[in-house]
Amino acid sequence: MYEPIKFAKTGGGDATGELVAPEGEGKAPGVVLIQEWWGLNGQIRHVAAKLAREGFVVAIPDLYHGRWTTDAGEAQQLMTALDWSVAVAELGGAAAFLQNHPRCSGNVGVMGFCLGGALTFATAATSPDVKAAVAYYGLASQESFDHSKIKAPMLAHFASKDDWASPDKAKALVEAMNARGQSIELHIYEAGHAFANEGRKDVYVPDAAALSWSRTTAFLHKHLG
Image (cartoon, rainbow, N blue to C red; front, side, top):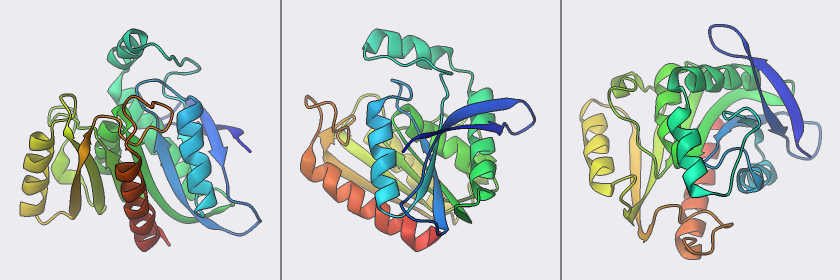
């Protein structure tokens, strides 16, 4: 079900990842799915499979280049070592690759969790191929990229109890974006960070996860087809 892929990064050079497509042979809208700080692991593959069942063809770039972990300390090290300029080039390349894939209708969105949520904002700001973006509990600093360059409509899911991706900072960002005329919808759930991660029973909140998922799939279908 998961097909290895190689594609060109924005600006040159190769990147790798995995592709998951819906059953059948027809064209479908595409989603670039961005990992949490753990890497390209079973949980993010599970999300990709769910998206495929919803009718999306999904590309998961491997931002850690073959490495992943279950240890929070190692995940912190991997995330800290990540070169954002390289990651954004890989994500932009994945969007372009997906847009031209024979199974893709040409409409491509981006979606990510935690680290991937932060990179969702960055990708939406830097990739002209992105038509919609969904960020789960992740924020990127204004120094990382220019929020004002985001053209695609966005949906953001944050937790009420989250020290890593503060709901207050999320509200401030959304207010600033809306004031500029950008389209971003924010939902804050009574939960903690990573509430949608089904593989982590210590933080998973089923009701919040289910509601955010229904909002996500409706949003992606509305804007991508």
